[in-house]
Image 1: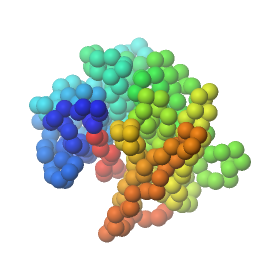
Image 2: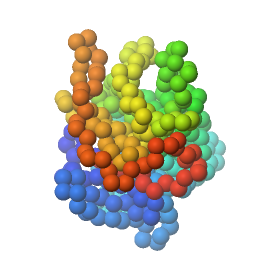
Image 3: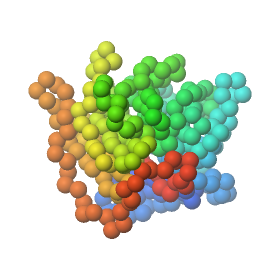
Amino acid sequence: PEGGDPPLRTRGVLVGASTDGKLRQWHVTSGRLLQEFGDPNGEVGQLLCVDYSPDGTRMAAGGLQELWVFDEETKQLAVKLKGGDSLTTAGHSSRVLAARFAPASCGDGNLVVSGGWDNTVQFWDLRAGHAVRLIYGPHICGDALDMEQQGKLLLTGSWREDEPLELWDFGTGKRLEALPWRSPGSSAEPSCLLYSARFSRDSAASMIAAGGSFAGPGQGEAKLIERHAASRCRCVGTLVRFTCLSVDFSPQLDTPMVAFSGSDGRIRAMRLEAEAQGSATSAPPVPPPPPPQLGSSGGPQPSPRQQEPGGYPARM
């Protein structure tokens, strides 16, 4: 959790979720494994996503239907979230592939949002121990759920052809906009099924990065989208022939960067620079590492319902 002044014990620490039911913390600079932990009773099962709380004191991880909240200092399970309030939601009914703590602007850190294969986004109250409301519609199959820093907008990316990228009102759950993935007149190009979507870290959430795979032949693509007032957006950059599995923006606003990871085992990191009129463009990418020894196939990606997840995005 690299905010303005992260706690010393979490500074430079990366946490990852694993299908063996464990969370692992790594020291970024040295690459050393610091700790691994999970439920000592073995009840957790698979863990498919993880997020730090804004203050770095807790971690929320998504599993097959539940969410598991761990204390960062003790590494002990603090809260198990499952089911709903029996009035507005029943909780998740399938795998949870994205989880986010609400930003600090939303209150006291007891709200978590999650999404997955059951076409719902669930809102969880840690004090209640269950989901308290939902949004129906987004089919989330990866790291494709985010909130902007002011806590007013929710971003979802769906693994589907129609209207995959959507903005929602965080307070009411009402859909505000479906952001066009293609410009008018480009309908002949294949649809992109999204695995990932993130807001930039500035207070206006002025940019969105998202990407995924194609439904037809080919690999996929990722886009960098600039948001303007009056719900206007424009694409300022596209990575092509690239199956994008995860994206994120750097927290440093003075030297902003965006990173895309793909199924080829590489991370593409780019600096963001402002044009003369105030919009942003991507500077030349940081030189890529040597090609991995074991590459991925160049064929179309299978549906997430047909593949067993083996590794999922980590959180800093």
